[in-house]
Image: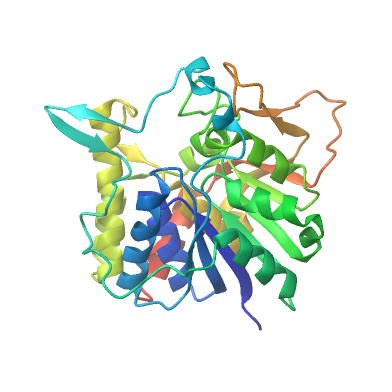
Amino acid sequence: MAKKKIILDVDTGSDDAVAIISAVLSGEFDVLGIVCSFGNQPLKYTVPNTLQVMELLNSDIPVFAGFGVPIAQDLTPGRRMNTLVKEAGGVVDGKEVEVHEKSFSYLPPAKTKKAMEEHGVSWMLRTIKKSKEKVTVIPVGPLTNLATVLRMDPSVADNIEEIVCMGGGVYVHNITPLAEINFYNDPEAAKIVINSGVKVTIVTLDATHSSWFGYDDADKMEKIGNPAAVFAANMLRHRISSANKIGTRVVEKSALHDVLAVCAVIDPSVLTDVRHQKCDIDIGGNFADGALIVDNRPFAVPENPTYIAYKGDGEKLLNMLCSHLENF
């Protein structure tokens, strides 16, 4: 049976790194390429971070730089000042603490892997259009790259099997009281993607926070013993510790958000509550900027094939991830 063709679209911070490892080591995918965007860190960091991971895996999957700015958000001066933003970092005891490091301290800098010269959006468009089989796109950062592809040539949608993205929150939010960071970082892009007519499954913060991990789970990963497993365990520990230090988490748990999206493509049953619902993205530039708005009224009829994931099976997710790490 042919492997599912996928494209990963990442803003490589800690959970993206583990998601890339999971996708590559799973053996389930033909990973056509990895496109980077801004998000957890600026593009100048997310690209080399991705290359660090690829060097760890000794993988020849091509890596491309995509967009480093949102489609329209930055065109309105002071737009981000209209929201109550909580950055994913801070200074504790005089030291900078970040959930997503600018460079992974647990890995050496990439020495042999280089990003491709072609722009990631051009490559994505060409690759999807020319593929003999439909391609599944897994964006786990801002949706800028994919939205631009869909705007450049809307017919590309015909050759996309589905989009499984990590983003949004219905009852759980992080960057603002109403928004999740990926959708907040480019609200217009998120709106374009969910209204594209392609089947979209949104793996929300509700789902990822219902299937998060603790230090004991990191220990289980580390016991696998290979470099990929040790790195994944360290990433999880770093996420838990950093979030606790800067006050964004009050429990010693952290979600590996992007891993859930990857594993949902392999086995959709890892998402245990998925609803076909009418929804939209707020692009008003005010307090709700980037919010995922779901119409729960009983008469609301979904206009697009957009599915909202509310819960994940944490035990199954951990077992899937560990089985992938064992393949290193």
